[in-house]
Image (cartoon, rainbow, N blue to C red; front, side):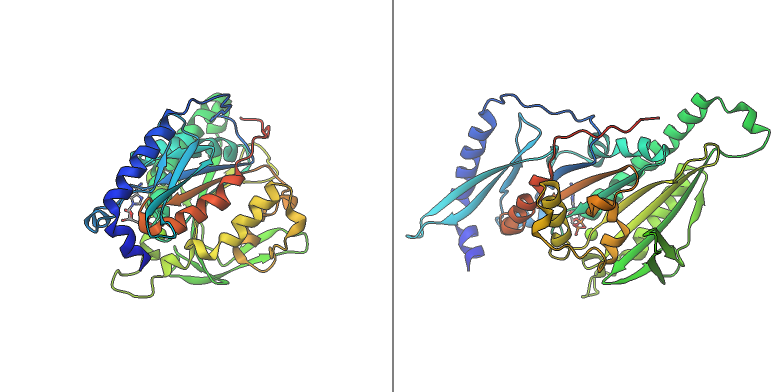
Length: 368
Ligand code: ADP
Ligand code: MG
């Protein structure tokens, strides 16, 4: 077995990877033009989780690292064998809008990647955060973890907008300038279930004008950040299956938290919407991410993308199908990967189809 062979040679691999990685970190950065604060229509972040304690026990080692001097680069080292069975390392590097390493917590991830979409959603835009990657790579840890920061940030920014608007006169009407509504559902195959309403089946429909409506979905009003968080956590708890249950639905289903921001003062064309999406295990969504990558590269004509067939791509058509974008939409992809040598091929696969999503063009939305 290749896995056993890799673990048997772990001393060699650890030492060699360390040497390679030290060298990679020493390479001078020339002309690196990046701007974290730039709001683009899509951004792609990589998050490499730490090696977990149970992985350490079995002699596992890390194969994927952020560059210490260039936060936009990740290195991956393939532990492999020559024709004569001599162990060797093959190294590759990939570029992202930012690479989060094992020491970066959810707060750092939130502050570097997500916070921008809160502002645009208050102005009526669509903001999508999508975590994807192999099962066990940290998708739920990321999405669930950043929600706390998002909820607080959303309500803080809302207060700021209200202050700036000087809405004193409104008080007499006893009206709230923003209404925040949350819903949380999961997509399992082509079926959708409401995670905040006893897993009742709901239906994602498209009218003849291609507007999306979700039939049967319960929305809940949130007056405070705490209330918003309460619903988010209830949704997550309903998604989780018992650890003893063999058929873990969380690796087969997409979980989608929808936060709708209705401005009751300005007559905006659209409500702002934030979608926080925890995608099913990588095997099942690679197709739509790859399709988006090719579209980004201008190669869409070479592939057939079944947007109409999948509930997820229908719902998030602004993200997956550039042409159907009729309103300002910003998507943040977070590719989650495991550094574990035994997950090497999954990690490489995720890096390969994610990195080309990094685009340099800037899209100019008017911030509030
Ligand atoms: P996924 O949702 O992709 O299947 P999880 O989010 O459930 O994976 O993560 C798998 C395990 O790894 C969990 O025990 C989680 O707590 C842990 N984990 C994931 N990412 C991190 C991280 N960045 N730091 C610490 N622990 C993490
Ligand atoms: Mg999960």
